Image 1 (tube, rainbow, N blue to C red):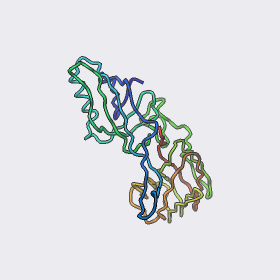
Image 2: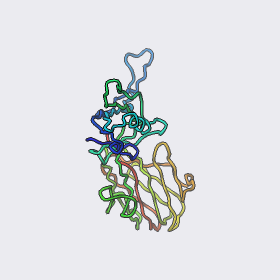
Image 3: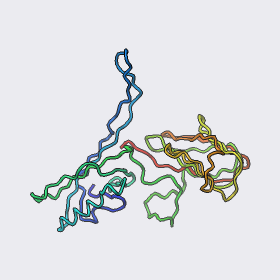
Image 4: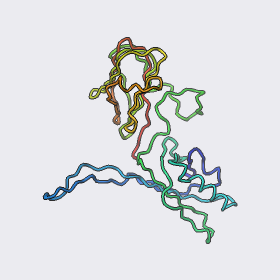
Length: 264
């Protein structure tokens, strides 16, 4: 561990070395409780995770100290919004964080160590690569997550076909389900919940169902098609989920796109 990437810029290219990091193994918890008048104690409605703080210890290596600090300030400028943080010894995980607090350093003593406080509003760590099928020539280099055989991409050619999705993360995933091809009257069930889409689509059509709780959209060729669905959105718990796909005359590709989410 001696390097960190911030929005694609490795700090070593700015003559800055990562010498320490502080990442709690678990975020702090927050209790959801209600005090009821006349009753002892409280009613507990479960706990949730709070935002996760991250601390980076950076060492200025170059001769131009002030110039390098100015570059560093620009890298972590809060006006850039959430930053994608990747460590060189954890290349398959990314941390989405923003600068919070104040950089601490002491120029009067010649100390070249700068401490940078960050905070992840969403405390879950994500996989760098999502499950979308990629091949050579699509902007990736060797070792950057090509899927020759994806466990999230399937050719659906018969009604009632089962497919197995393996969520390797440690939290629930809310996938984007992309369907390219033709069918009539579709349903996708995980055994407990069923998404349906009425009517037919053609060979060159693309249906996208975004299960993200902040979005929950159904789009056909980019246009709103929510009214043709039953407004049920599927989610993937950790481990394997078997989806049963039912439709009339199915001839389409089914892709389930999401990132793995980790506690640490």
